[in-house]
Image 1 (tube, one colour):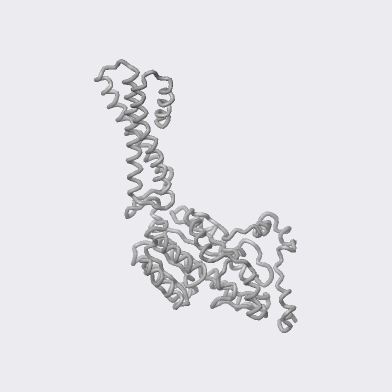
Image 2 (cartoon, rainbow, N blue to C red):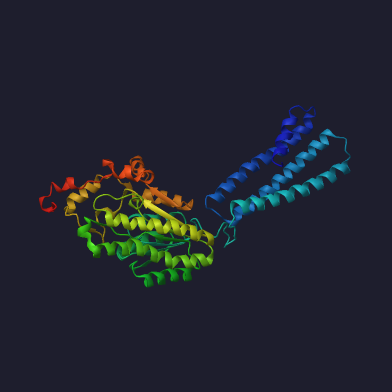
Length: 415
């Protein structure tokens, strides 16, 4: 109702003969309209993650000012249209201003409660306590290279306060930490195998103790073991599940109790596009492990929501990272020479890891449950698997045939 009043007054003023009075009214209402635009801008900033308490205060002030301008504008209208005495106008002004202020203050509380149901004031920040990403505290496993590295650097650019890197490649991780420190971001490096739960838990608990909070736990560490299932065998199958599945689970178990206790936090588990669809030839073990990560994440999201903790599953598609060529800890059991394999990987037209990380962080900020980056048009056909698995599995397009490379490598031919 209060938003309609100024527009109604302006509309009536077009047909009013008391031009002098309505000129005053228009002058009083014009600032109101500008304040509305200002408030929309402030609320947009608040929704985009810049959740400083000062913005909340400004929104309250703009609501109050809007109430005052409506009140004064209405009194001008009454004064221009009626023969009320000066005392009557003052009384109406007092009553209307009181009501307007009360309604706007109450409506502001209602709006904020609806938009931010988990509202809490935490060190000058608003929303559910989670910092996105200004002054946040983050832990990234596998942060020395690839997507993990780029996510760390991007978080630094977005104002993160502290980023802890967990990786077995300490030298590379230290290089990333040095770049972060140059951006005035606190950063620490820990050489920890994600398969070692006790060591991982110690680092996570130490981070919480040092900074008093933990905003993001990004379980990114993973390995690629590729080859025929009979060559992968039991030992390699266990290895890939230990890193890709149990490593993620260890990160969850270490961070989730902390986030549950503090009432906020965001766990991001990195899976793969092959965690949503069959990986095709030679990717049986890898695809199976990534399917497990998706299952863990989507189910945990439902449980964690009751405690204010967010869970997202990030499924990278074709991204230019070392994992495609084996990485430091991967295994290629296909029999294809490394140079030929790398040549095939180079033809994949992969997305730059930096771009991928930036897009992923935007989606994480929006609390998306499950997302793929990049979402290329050619990947749409693969989503047929989700709609009609039998159609997708029987489609020749879905079959990744690496055997065409074997014809060029006699010693790699299957026996």
